[in-house]
Amino acid sequence: MTRVTVDPGRTIGQVNRNIFGGFIEHLGRCIYGGIYEEGSPLSDRQGFRADTLALLKDLQVSVLRWPGGNFVSNYHWQDGVGPKDARPARSDLAWGGVEPNRFGTDEFMAYCAVLGTEPYICLNMGSGSLEEALAWVEYCNSRRATYWAEQRRLNGRDEPYGVTWWGLGNEMWGEWQVGSMSAPEYVREASRWAKAIKLLDPRAKLVSCGWNGWDDWDREVIDGMAGLVDLHSLHIYTGSDDYWTNVLQVHQAERAIACSTALIQRAAYVQKLDRWPRIAYDEWNVWFRTRDGTLEERYSMADALAVATYLNIFVRNCAWVKMANLAQLVNAIAPVVTTPEVAVVQPIYYPFLMHSQAVLDLAVDVHVDGPTVAAPDPPPVGRWAHRLGDLGPFDVLDASATVDLADQKVAVTLVNRSESQEKTEIQLRGHLFGAVLRARTITSAPEPGPLGLDAVNMEDFTVTAHGNALVVDLPAKSFTLLEARMDS
Ligand code: AHR
Image (cartoon, rainbow, N blue to C red; front, top):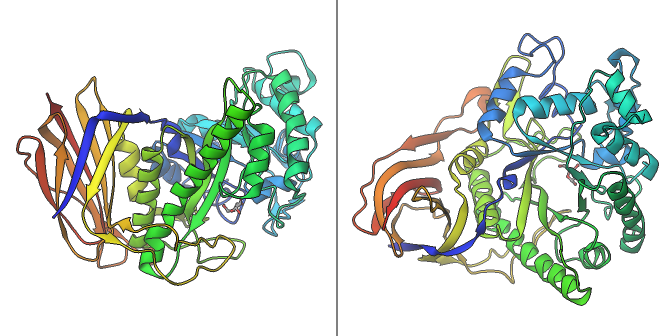
């Protein structure tokens, strides 16, 4: 039997709801045909697909990154404001399409408003200029009678949008990125941008462009920019047709968080900083199948277990991870898939939904005592290849727990990666279990769902606690959420 000990007395930190962020890019059918479809009977009067919107609302996406991704490095935001029919179509150098510019800044802000999420804009540091970036900040945030604020008013919006989060470029280290740079070039350029943006809008919060957390790029960028930014971003994509590689590779995120927090702490100490950046995992997901310009990945239950584990990792590391953005939300490597007739969900939708709806204020210590599994052997391949050999062994059961001390509630999320059912005892240290408020499990459904996509069964079950323990049978390859009252 596996034993999971949850210790509400040992708090890890406050969970920032921004770990339930999302990302939408002008890529394939993510925006056009996914988020936004003018003339569709399924769209509202702003052109937003109401069915997509309803599914995303349930996810309670806290912060939304836009417009890229690789796309942003050749995106000129001024093409995307003003009367729609006068906006120019442009070549998209990242994904090879044509960008019609009918969904631009004002549409993105309107979308954030209806979705109930906070905007996060990534700036074009590829073909874009600092002047253009400053104009964008002014357009979004200025109350003054300045040129770009006046343009916003002329376009129908009097009040500033008050965009807090601004990303200083996307993956500027990548040779595929328009205008890619060396780390010293990036630090010089991004420092100029950071200082100027803060002069224009001192409330702006800036995100430096990182990589995988342990590369020389991250070291040089953190050393150069730790005093200037609020968050350092990391990206991670994992996945494999090999089941164990697929579900375990996710633990690379823990290595990346550990390495980059060490780099940040070192920079803060050496440079005697009063404040230092935390981490934004502003792109993360399973992605290994599709390499065309659409990225229409079809997800499985194994991928859902990987996504559930990512979220456990962000919760366990909440003292450092202050934002994370699932890449992406619709059609392109996404939990939601649309056709002109319908919007449906893929298996990875459910762990995000369950985590986002259940996670409480404070992450607390969790100890798993049960079977372990060694890192798989096959050498990884591809751009996002991650070596696992020097990590592990890993607990077969991955867990995280959060509590609300005022409301005396606990939420535990359990990813059973075992290929068999596992009897598991959850012990609450220093408290007794009160009523179990919810016990919910997802497993792979035997039959495909709508559009032939893999489907999951989501089932609620009853479980009775005895004192400070409760025992559950976790099905093979499942994700389970337990929410309960805590008594003293
Ligand atoms: O999310 C898909 C792509 O992955 C993004 O455009 C890029 O930033 C990353 O390489």
